[in-house]
Image (tube, rainbow over all chains, first blue to last red; front, side, top):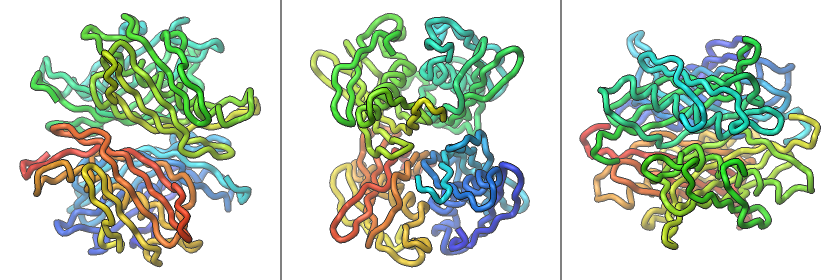
Length: 124
Length: 124
Length: 124
Length: 124
Protein backbone atom coordinates (compact mmCIF):
# COMPACT_ATOMS: atom_id res chain seq x y z
CA UNK A 1 0.00 0.00 0.00
CA UNK A 2 2.81 2.36 0.87
CA UNK A 3 4.10 1.69 -2.64
CA UNK A 4 1.06 3.63 -3.88
CA UNK A 5 1.78 6.61 -1.64
CA UNK A 6 -1.14 5.85 0.70
CA UNK A 7 -1.10 6.44 4.46
CA UNK A 8 -3.27 5.46 7.41
CA UNK A 9 -5.05 8.54 8.82
CA UNK A 10 -7.28 6.95 11.49
CA UNK A 11 -7.17 3.78 13.57
CA UNK A 12 -10.00 2.94 15.96
CA UNK A 13 -11.45 -0.36 17.22
CA UNK A 14 -12.80 -2.07 14.10
CA UNK A 15 -12.29 0.96 11.86
CA UNK A 16 -9.38 2.26 9.79
CA UNK A 17 -9.14 5.16 7.32
CA UNK A 18 -6.53 5.30 4.55
CA UNK A 19 -5.84 8.34 2.38
CA UNK A 20 -4.30 8.21 -1.09
CA UNK A 21 -3.32 11.57 -2.62
CA UNK A 22 -3.65 12.11 -6.37
CA UNK A 23 -0.40 11.34 -8.17
CA UNK A 24 0.34 10.44 -11.80
CA UNK A 25 1.09 6.83 -10.81
CA UNK A 26 -2.42 6.26 -9.44
CA UNK A 27 -4.54 8.42 -11.76
CA UNK A 28 -5.57 8.13 -15.37
CA UNK A 29 -5.37 10.65 -18.16
CA UNK A 30 -8.56 12.42 -17.03
CA UNK A 31 -7.32 12.72 -13.45
CA UNK A 32 -9.52 9.88 -12.20
CA UNK A 33 -7.98 7.46 -9.74
CA UNK A 34 -7.42 4.01 -11.22
CA UNK A 35 -10.01 1.49 -10.06
CA UNK A 36 -7.07 -0.70 -9.08
CA UNK A 37 -5.71 1.93 -6.71
CA UNK A 38 -9.16 2.63 -5.26
CA UNK A 39 -9.75 -1.07 -4.68
CA UNK A 40 -6.29 -1.61 -3.23
CA UNK A 41 -6.70 0.99 -0.48
CA UNK A 42 -10.21 -0.25 0.28
CA UNK A 43 -8.85 -3.79 0.65
CA UNK A 44 -6.04 -2.52 2.90
CA UNK A 45 -8.38 -0.46 5.06
CA UNK A 46 -10.48 -3.55 5.73
CA UNK A 47 -7.43 -5.64 6.53
CA UNK A 48 -6.10 -3.13 9.04
CA UNK A 49 -9.56 -2.68 10.55
CA UNK A 50 -9.77 -6.43 11.15
CA UNK A 51 -6.37 -6.41 12.86
CA UNK A 52 -7.41 -3.73 15.36
CA UNK A 53 -9.58 -6.36 17.05
CA UNK A 54 -6.82 -8.99 17.37
CA UNK A 55 -3.72 -9.33 19.57
CA UNK A 56 -0.57 -7.69 18.21
CA UNK A 57 1.26 -9.65 15.48
CA UNK A 58 -1.92 -11.38 14.36
CA UNK A 59 -2.09 -11.24 10.62
CA UNK A 60 -5.00 -11.52 8.21
CA UNK A 61 -5.32 -12.44 4.56
CA UNK A 62 -8.02 -11.27 2.20
CA UNK A 63 -10.18 -14.25 1.21
CA UNK A 64 -12.32 -12.25 -1.19
CA UNK A 65 -13.88 -8.87 -1.74
CA UNK A 66 -16.58 -7.35 -3.89
CA UNK A 67 -16.60 -3.69 -4.84
CA UNK A 68 -19.00 -1.44 -6.73
CA UNK A 69 -17.41 1.51 -8.49
CA UNK A 70 -20.18 4.06 -7.97
CA UNK A 71 -18.76 7.21 -9.53
CA UNK A 72 -15.54 8.45 -11.13
CA UNK A 73 -12.95 8.70 -8.35
CA UNK A 74 -11.83 12.30 -8.63
CA UNK A 75 -10.34 14.68 -6.08
CA UNK A 76 -7.18 15.83 -4.37
CA UNK A 77 -7.26 12.53 -2.58
CA UNK A 78 -9.42 9.46 -2.03
CA UNK A 79 -10.17 8.15 1.44
CA UNK A 80 -10.95 4.50 2.10
CA UNK A 81 -12.84 3.47 5.25
CA UNK A 82 -12.78 -0.14 6.42
CA UNK A 83 -15.29 -1.13 9.11
CA UNK A 84 -15.61 -4.53 10.75
CA UNK A 85 -19.14 -5.93 10.47
CA UNK A 86 -18.38 -9.23 12.14
CA UNK A 87 -15.22 -10.55 13.75
CA UNK A 88 -15.14 -14.28 14.42
CA UNK A 89 -12.52 -16.78 15.54
CA UNK A 90 -11.45 -17.53 11.98
CA UNK A 91 -13.15 -15.07 9.66
CA UNK A 92 -13.76 -11.33 9.70
CA UNK A 93 -16.18 -9.48 7.42
CA UNK A 94 -15.65 -5.78 6.67
CA UNK A 95 -17.61 -3.05 4.97
CA UNK A 96 -15.50 -1.01 2.55
CA UNK A 97 -16.20 2.57 1.50
CA UNK A 98 -14.16 4.95 -0.64
CA UNK A 99 -14.74 8.70 -0.89
CA UNK A 100 -13.26 11.23 -3.31
CA UNK A 101 -12.47 14.55 -1.63
CA UNK A 102 -12.25 17.77 -3.63
CA UNK A 103 -12.38 21.29 -2.17
CA UNK A 104 -13.61 19.79 1.09
CA UNK A 105 -16.52 18.08 -0.67
CA UNK A 106 -16.69 14.33 0.01
CA UNK A 107 -18.43 12.00 -2.44
CA UNK A 108 -18.80 8.22 -2.15
CA UNK A 109 -17.05 6.70 -5.17
CA UNK A 110 -16.94 3.02 -4.24
CA UNK A 111 -18.56 0.60 -1.81
CA UNK A 112 -17.73 -2.98 -1.08
CA UNK A 113 -17.58 -5.91 1.28
CA UNK A 114 -14.67 -8.14 2.20
CA UNK A 115 -13.96 -11.46 3.92
CA UNK A 116 -10.64 -11.99 5.73
CA UNK A 117 -9.07 -15.00 7.40
CA UNK A 118 -6.92 -14.81 10.50
CA UNK A 119 -3.49 -16.38 10.18
CA UNK A 120 -1.36 -16.85 13.25
CA UNK A 121 1.83 -18.07 11.74
CA UNK A 122 0.15 -21.47 11.60
CA UNK A 123 -0.76 -21.15 7.90
CA UNK A 124 -4.22 -21.09 6.39
CA UNK B 1 -41.62 -12.60 -1.57
CA UNK B 2 -45.20 -12.78 -0.34
CA UNK B 3 -45.03 -16.50 -1.15
CA UNK B 4 -42.58 -16.77 1.75
CA UNK B 5 -44.89 -14.99 4.17
CA UNK B 6 -42.78 -11.80 4.23
CA UNK B 7 -44.21 -8.30 4.53
CA UNK B 8 -42.91 -4.75 4.10
CA UNK B 9 -42.78 -2.99 7.47
CA UNK B 10 -41.17 0.31 6.52
CA UNK B 11 -40.89 2.39 3.33
CA UNK B 12 -38.86 5.59 3.30
CA UNK B 13 -36.91 7.39 0.56
CA UNK B 14 -34.16 4.97 -0.41
CA UNK B 15 -34.86 2.55 2.43
CA UNK B 16 -37.22 -0.39 2.88
CA UNK B 17 -37.58 -2.94 5.71
CA UNK B 18 -39.05 -6.40 5.19
CA UNK B 19 -39.96 -8.81 7.97
CA UNK B 20 -40.17 -12.57 7.59
CA UNK B 21 -41.65 -14.48 10.55
CA UNK B 22 -40.33 -17.93 11.43
CA UNK B 23 -42.39 -20.66 9.78
CA UNK B 24 -41.61 -24.29 8.95
CA UNK B 25 -41.41 -23.45 5.22
CA UNK B 26 -38.54 -20.99 5.71
CA UNK B 27 -36.63 -22.58 8.58
CA UNK B 28 -34.43 -25.65 8.90
CA UNK B 29 -34.57 -28.46 11.41
CA UNK B 30 -32.66 -26.41 14.04
CA UNK B 31 -35.00 -23.43 13.67
CA UNK B 32 -32.51 -21.45 11.61
CA UNK B 33 -33.88 -19.52 8.67
CA UNK B 34 -32.77 -20.93 5.32
CA UNK B 35 -30.02 -18.90 3.69
CA UNK B 36 -32.22 -18.83 0.60
CA UNK B 37 -35.06 -17.17 2.51
CA UNK B 38 -32.70 -14.70 4.18
CA UNK B 39 -31.14 -13.80 0.83
CA UNK B 40 -34.51 -13.52 -0.89
CA UNK B 41 -35.88 -10.92 1.51
CA UNK B 42 -32.59 -9.00 1.41
CA UNK B 43 -32.77 -8.94 -2.39
CA UNK B 44 -36.41 -7.80 -2.24
CA UNK B 45 -35.69 -5.07 0.31
CA UNK B 46 -33.02 -3.62 -1.97
CA UNK B 47 -35.30 -3.76 -4.99
CA UNK B 48 -38.13 -1.96 -3.21
CA UNK B 49 -35.67 0.59 -1.78
CA UNK B 50 -34.46 1.39 -5.31
CA UNK B 51 -38.05 1.89 -6.49
CA UNK B 52 -38.81 4.48 -3.80
CA UNK B 53 -36.57 6.91 -5.69
CA UNK B 54 -38.25 6.42 -9.08
CA UNK B 55 -41.63 7.49 -10.55
CA UNK B 56 -44.51 5.11 -9.93
CA UNK B 57 -44.63 2.03 -12.17
CA UNK B 58 -40.87 2.08 -12.72
CA UNK B 59 -39.57 -1.40 -12.28
CA UNK B 60 -36.12 -2.73 -11.44
CA UNK B 61 -34.35 -6.04 -11.95
CA UNK B 62 -31.57 -7.44 -9.82
CA UNK B 63 -28.38 -7.53 -11.87
CA UNK B 64 -26.34 -9.19 -9.13
CA UNK B 65 -25.87 -9.35 -5.40
CA UNK B 66 -23.28 -10.55 -2.94
CA UNK B 67 -24.15 -11.62 0.57
CA UNK B 68 -22.15 -12.71 3.60
CA UNK B 69 -23.96 -15.01 6.00
CA UNK B 70 -22.50 -13.73 9.27
CA UNK B 71 -24.29 -15.80 11.88
CA UNK B 72 -27.03 -18.43 12.11
CA UNK B 73 -30.30 -16.63 11.33
CA UNK B 74 -32.40 -17.42 14.38
CA UNK B 75 -35.30 -15.61 15.96
CA UNK B 76 -39.04 -15.07 15.94
CA UNK B 77 -38.47 -13.21 12.72
CA UNK B 78 -35.72 -11.86 10.50
CA UNK B 79 -35.75 -8.28 9.26
CA UNK B 80 -34.06 -7.24 6.00
CA UNK B 81 -33.08 -3.61 5.45
CA UNK B 82 -32.32 -2.37 1.94
CA UNK B 83 -30.65 1.04 1.63
CA UNK B 84 -29.78 2.84 -1.60
CA UNK B 85 -26.09 3.77 -1.76
CA UNK B 86 -26.23 5.26 -5.26
CA UNK B 87 -29.13 5.80 -7.62
CA UNK B 88 -28.19 6.55 -11.22
CA UNK B 89 -30.08 6.86 -14.48
CA UNK B 90 -29.64 3.18 -15.30
CA UNK B 91 -28.17 1.44 -12.25
CA UNK B 92 -28.86 1.53 -8.53
CA UNK B 93 -26.59 0.08 -5.86
CA UNK B 94 -28.01 -0.95 -2.49
CA UNK B 95 -26.62 -2.04 0.83
CA UNK B 96 -28.38 -5.11 2.26
CA UNK B 97 -28.59 -6.03 5.93
CA UNK B 98 -30.49 -8.80 7.68
CA UNK B 99 -31.12 -9.02 11.41
CA UNK B 100 -32.47 -11.87 13.48
CA UNK B 101 -34.81 -10.69 16.23
CA UNK B 102 -35.41 -12.78 19.35
CA UNK B 103 -36.93 -11.52 22.61
CA UNK B 104 -36.39 -7.97 21.39
CA UNK B 105 -32.69 -8.60 20.82
CA UNK B 106 -31.53 -7.75 17.28
CA UNK B 107 -28.42 -9.41 15.82
CA UNK B 108 -26.97 -8.86 12.36
CA UNK B 109 -27.05 -12.20 10.56
CA UNK B 110 -26.22 -11.20 6.99
CA UNK B 111 -24.78 -8.27 5.05
CA UNK B 112 -24.56 -7.71 1.34
CA UNK B 113 -24.53 -5.41 -1.62
CA UNK B 114 -26.68 -5.39 -4.74
CA UNK B 115 -26.78 -3.86 -8.21
CA UNK B 116 -30.14 -3.22 -9.89
CA UNK B 117 -31.11 -2.01 -13.36
CA UNK B 118 -34.07 0.21 -14.08
CA UNK B 119 -36.51 -1.16 -16.64
CA UNK B 120 -39.27 1.06 -17.98
CA UNK B 121 -41.27 -1.38 -19.95
CA UNK B 122 -38.67 -0.93 -22.67
CA UNK B 123 -36.76 -4.11 -21.84
CA UNK B 124 -33.22 -4.42 -20.53
CA UNK C 1 -33.44 -27.47 -0.64
CA UNK C 2 -35.77 -30.45 -0.70
CA UNK C 3 -38.43 -28.08 0.61
CA UNK C 4 -38.28 -26.40 -2.81
CA UNK C 5 -38.73 -29.69 -4.68
CA UNK C 6 -35.13 -29.79 -5.89
CA UNK C 7 -33.10 -32.98 -6.29
CA UNK C 8 -29.46 -33.85 -6.87
CA UNK C 9 -28.98 -35.29 -10.36
CA UNK C 10 -25.19 -35.67 -10.49
CA UNK C 11 -22.41 -36.11 -7.94
CA UNK C 12 -18.77 -36.27 -9.00
CA UNK C 13 -15.51 -35.25 -7.34
CA UNK C 14 -15.80 -31.49 -6.89
CA UNK C 15 -18.98 -31.17 -8.94
CA UNK C 16 -22.69 -31.48 -8.16
CA UNK C 17 -25.78 -30.81 -10.28
CA UNK C 18 -29.16 -29.95 -8.79
CA UNK C 19 -32.42 -29.78 -10.74
CA UNK C 20 -35.46 -27.78 -9.71
CA UNK C 21 -38.64 -28.40 -11.74
CA UNK C 22 -41.04 -25.51 -12.40
CA UNK C 23 -43.80 -25.38 -9.78
CA UNK C 24 -46.08 -22.54 -8.65
CA UNK C 25 -44.18 -22.26 -5.34
CA UNK C 26 -40.89 -21.40 -7.07
CA UNK C 27 -42.08 -19.43 -10.09
CA UNK C 28 -43.57 -15.98 -10.54
CA UNK C 29 -46.67 -14.91 -12.42
CA UNK C 30 -44.85 -14.95 -15.78
CA UNK C 31 -43.48 -18.46 -15.21
CA UNK C 32 -40.00 -17.24 -14.37
CA UNK C 33 -38.23 -18.95 -11.50
CA UNK C 34 -37.84 -16.72 -8.44
CA UNK C 35 -34.30 -15.36 -8.09
CA UNK C 36 -34.44 -16.68 -4.53
CA UNK C 37 -35.07 -20.23 -5.73
CA UNK C 38 -32.39 -19.97 -8.40
CA UNK C 39 -29.87 -18.68 -5.89
CA UNK C 40 -30.83 -21.28 -3.30
CA UNK C 41 -30.12 -24.25 -5.57
CA UNK C 42 -26.88 -22.65 -6.78
CA UNK C 43 -25.78 -22.21 -3.17
CA UNK C 44 -26.72 -25.82 -2.39
CA UNK C 45 -24.92 -27.19 -5.45
CA UNK C 46 -21.73 -25.48 -4.34
CA UNK C 47 -22.08 -26.76 -0.80
CA UNK C 48 -22.57 -30.35 -1.91
CA UNK C 49 -19.69 -30.04 -4.40
CA UNK C 50 -17.39 -28.94 -1.59
CA UNK C 51 -18.42 -31.93 0.52
CA UNK C 52 -17.53 -34.43 -2.20
CA UNK C 53 -13.86 -33.66 -1.48
CA UNK C 54 -14.08 -34.22 2.29
CA UNK C 55 -14.45 -37.30 4.51
CA UNK C 56 -18.02 -38.40 5.17
CA UNK C 57 -19.91 -36.39 7.82
CA UNK C 58 -17.81 -33.31 7.19
CA UNK C 59 -20.13 -30.34 6.95
CA UNK C 60 -19.69 -26.95 5.32
CA UNK C 61 -21.33 -23.58 5.83
CA UNK C 62 -21.71 -20.88 3.21
CA UNK C 63 -19.56 -17.91 4.18
CA UNK C 64 -20.70 -15.76 1.26
CA UNK C 65 -21.72 -15.91 -2.34
CA UNK C 66 -22.14 -13.52 -5.25
CA UNK C 67 -24.50 -14.20 -8.10
CA UNK C 68 -25.29 -12.44 -11.38
CA UNK C 69 -28.78 -13.01 -12.71
CA UNK C 70 -28.01 -13.09 -16.43
CA UNK C 71 -31.36 -13.78 -18.00
CA UNK C 72 -34.94 -14.56 -16.97
CA UNK C 73 -34.92 -18.10 -15.54
CA UNK C 74 -37.52 -19.85 -17.65
CA UNK C 75 -37.98 -23.48 -18.55
CA UNK C 76 -39.43 -26.81 -17.50
CA UNK C 77 -36.66 -26.87 -14.94
CA UNK C 78 -33.52 -25.05 -13.90
CA UNK C 79 -30.26 -26.89 -13.29
CA UNK C 80 -27.58 -25.57 -10.94
CA UNK C 81 -23.99 -26.74 -11.29
CA UNK C 82 -21.53 -26.25 -8.42
CA UNK C 83 -17.84 -26.78 -9.21
CA UNK C 84 -14.98 -26.55 -6.72
CA UNK C 85 -12.30 -24.06 -7.83
CA UNK C 86 -10.14 -24.45 -4.74
CA UNK C 87 -10.44 -26.72 -1.74
CA UNK C 88 -8.27 -25.79 1.25
CA UNK C 89 -8.00 -26.98 4.82
CA UNK C 90 -10.49 -24.41 6.05
CA UNK C 91 -12.07 -22.73 3.03
CA UNK C 92 -13.47 -23.94 -0.27
CA UNK C 93 -14.31 -21.72 -3.24
CA UNK C 94 -16.88 -22.83 -5.80
CA UNK C 95 -18.08 -21.63 -9.15
CA UNK C 96 -21.86 -21.57 -9.47
CA UNK C 97 -23.83 -21.81 -12.71
CA UNK C 98 -27.56 -22.07 -13.33
CA UNK C 99 -29.17 -23.06 -16.60
CA UNK C 100 -32.80 -22.89 -17.68
CA UNK C 101 -33.85 -25.89 -19.75
CA UNK C 102 -36.78 -25.70 -22.15
CA UNK C 103 -37.52 -28.17 -24.97
CA UNK C 104 -34.00 -29.55 -24.58
CA UNK C 105 -32.47 -26.07 -25.03
CA UNK C 106 -30.14 -25.05 -22.20
CA UNK C 107 -29.47 -21.37 -21.49
CA UNK C 108 -27.25 -19.95 -18.78
CA UNK C 109 -29.46 -17.84 -16.53
CA UNK C 110 -27.16 -17.15 -13.57
CA UNK C 111 -23.47 -17.32 -12.67
CA UNK C 112 -21.79 -16.86 -9.34
CA UNK C 113 -19.00 -17.65 -6.94
CA UNK C 114 -19.14 -18.89 -3.37
CA UNK C 115 -16.90 -19.28 -0.34
CA UNK C 116 -17.56 -22.09 2.15
CA UNK C 117 -16.03 -22.96 5.51
CA UNK C 118 -15.51 -26.51 6.73
CA UNK C 119 -17.07 -27.32 10.08
CA UNK C 120 -16.27 -30.58 11.83
CA UNK C 121 -18.67 -30.47 14.66
CA UNK C 122 -16.17 -28.18 16.34
CA UNK C 123 -18.04 -24.98 15.46
CA UNK C 124 -16.85 -22.11 13.29
CA UNK D 1 -2.77 -1.12 -16.74
CA UNK D 2 0.29 -0.28 -18.80
CA UNK D 3 1.46 1.72 -15.78
CA UNK D 4 1.88 -1.65 -14.03
CA UNK D 5 3.95 -3.11 -16.84
CA UNK D 6 1.17 -5.46 -18.03
CA UNK D 7 0.54 -6.35 -21.66
CA UNK D 8 -2.24 -8.05 -23.61
CA UNK D 9 -1.07 -11.44 -24.89
CA UNK D 10 -4.27 -12.78 -26.48
CA UNK D 11 -7.42 -11.25 -27.95
CA UNK D 12 -10.23 -13.45 -29.20
CA UNK D 13 -14.00 -12.98 -29.41
CA UNK D 14 -15.13 -12.59 -25.81
CA UNK D 15 -11.76 -13.53 -24.33
CA UNK D 16 -8.61 -11.56 -23.48
CA UNK D 17 -5.40 -12.60 -21.71
CA UNK D 18 -3.15 -10.12 -19.90
CA UNK D 19 0.32 -10.91 -18.56
CA UNK D 20 2.03 -9.03 -15.75
CA UNK D 21 5.71 -9.88 -15.18
CA UNK D 22 7.13 -9.84 -11.64
CA UNK D 23 8.68 -6.47 -10.81
CA UNK D 24 9.42 -4.78 -7.49
CA UNK D 25 6.57 -2.29 -8.05
CA UNK D 26 3.93 -5.03 -8.18
CA UNK D 27 5.32 -7.59 -5.73
CA UNK D 28 5.66 -7.69 -1.95
CA UNK D 29 8.65 -8.50 0.19
CA UNK D 30 8.12 -12.26 -0.22
CA UNK D 31 7.90 -11.99 -4.01
CA UNK D 32 4.12 -12.39 -4.03
CA UNK D 33 2.21 -10.19 -6.41
CA UNK D 34 0.14 -7.54 -4.64
CA UNK D 35 -3.55 -8.40 -4.53
CA UNK D 36 -4.15 -4.94 -5.97
CA UNK D 37 -2.05 -5.72 -9.03
CA UNK D 38 -3.66 -9.13 -9.47
CA UNK D 39 -7.13 -7.62 -9.23
CA UNK D 40 -6.26 -4.75 -11.57
CA UNK D 41 -5.20 -7.00 -14.44
CA UNK D 42 -8.20 -9.27 -13.89
CA UNK D 43 -10.48 -6.23 -14.07
CA UNK D 44 -8.72 -5.04 -17.24
CA UNK D 45 -8.88 -8.46 -18.89
CA UNK D 46 -12.66 -8.52 -18.38
CA UNK D 47 -13.05 -5.00 -19.73
CA UNK D 48 -11.10 -5.75 -22.88
CA UNK D 49 -12.94 -9.06 -23.34
CA UNK D 50 -16.25 -7.19 -23.23
CA UNK D 51 -15.03 -4.73 -25.87
CA UNK D 52 -14.15 -7.50 -28.33
CA UNK D 53 -17.88 -8.04 -28.85
CA UNK D 54 -18.72 -4.39 -29.55
CA UNK D 55 -18.09 -2.04 -32.50
CA UNK D 56 -14.76 -0.18 -32.42
CA UNK D 57 -14.59 2.82 -30.12
CA UNK D 58 -17.27 1.43 -27.81
CA UNK D 59 -16.12 1.83 -24.26
CA UNK D 60 -17.10 0.01 -21.08
CA UNK D 61 -16.89 0.88 -17.39
CA UNK D 62 -16.60 -1.60 -14.55
CA UNK D 63 -19.79 -1.51 -12.50
CA UNK D 64 -18.52 -3.98 -9.92
CA UNK D 65 -16.41 -7.05 -9.50
CA UNK D 66 -15.88 -9.77 -6.91
CA UNK D 67 -12.65 -11.66 -6.59
CA UNK D 68 -11.46 -14.57 -4.46
CA UNK D 69 -7.75 -14.67 -3.75
CA UNK D 70 -7.22 -18.44 -3.82
CA UNK D 71 -3.49 -18.80 -3.30
CA UNK D 72 -0.39 -16.62 -2.97
CA UNK D 73 0.27 -15.12 -6.40
CA UNK D 74 3.83 -16.19 -7.08
CA UNK D 75 5.74 -16.73 -10.29
CA UNK D 76 7.75 -15.12 -13.03
CA UNK D 77 4.49 -13.61 -14.16
CA UNK D 78 0.77 -13.74 -13.54
CA UNK D 79 -1.73 -14.14 -16.35
CA UNK D 80 -5.28 -12.85 -16.16
CA UNK D 81 -8.00 -14.29 -18.37
CA UNK D 82 -11.25 -12.41 -18.90
CA UNK D 83 -14.11 -14.34 -20.51
CA UNK D 84 -17.53 -12.93 -21.39
CA UNK D 85 -20.35 -14.96 -19.85
CA UNK D 86 -23.16 -12.73 -21.12
CA UNK D 87 -23.10 -9.70 -23.37
CA UNK D 88 -26.29 -7.64 -23.39
CA UNK D 89 -27.32 -4.29 -24.84
CA UNK D 90 -26.33 -2.42 -21.69
CA UNK D 91 -24.49 -4.83 -19.41
CA UNK D 92 -21.79 -7.44 -19.87
CA UNK D 93 -20.82 -10.07 -17.29
CA UNK D 94 -17.35 -11.60 -17.34
CA UNK D 95 -15.60 -14.45 -15.59
CA UNK D 96 -12.16 -13.50 -14.29
CA UNK D 97 -9.28 -15.91 -13.67
CA UNK D 98 -5.69 -15.26 -12.67
CA UNK D 99 -2.87 -17.78 -12.87
CA UNK D 100 0.64 -17.62 -11.48
CA UNK D 101 3.21 -19.12 -13.81
CA UNK D 102 6.55 -20.44 -12.54
CA UNK D 103 8.87 -22.75 -14.45
CA UNK D 104 6.07 -23.45 -16.91
CA UNK D 105 3.73 -24.55 -14.08
CA UNK D 106 0.42 -22.68 -14.07
CA UNK D 107 -1.60 -22.39 -10.85
CA UNK D 108 -4.92 -20.61 -10.41
CA UNK D 109 -4.36 -17.85 -7.84
CA UNK D 110 -7.57 -15.83 -8.15
CA UNK D 111 -11.08 -16.17 -9.55
CA UNK D 112 -13.79 -13.59 -9.88
CA UNK D 113 -16.78 -12.21 -11.69
CA UNK D 114 -17.40 -8.75 -13.06
CA UNK D 115 -20.25 -6.58 -14.36
CA UNK D 116 -19.55 -3.90 -16.95
CA UNK D 117 -21.71 -1.19 -18.51
CA UNK D 118 -21.41 -0.06 -22.11
CA UNK D 119 -20.85 3.66 -22.58
CA UNK D 120 -21.06 5.17 -26.04
CA UNK D 121 -19.89 8.65 -25.37
CA UNK D 122 -23.42 9.30 -24.14
CA UNK D 123 -22.52 8.98 -20.46
CA UNK D 124 -23.75 6.36 -17.99
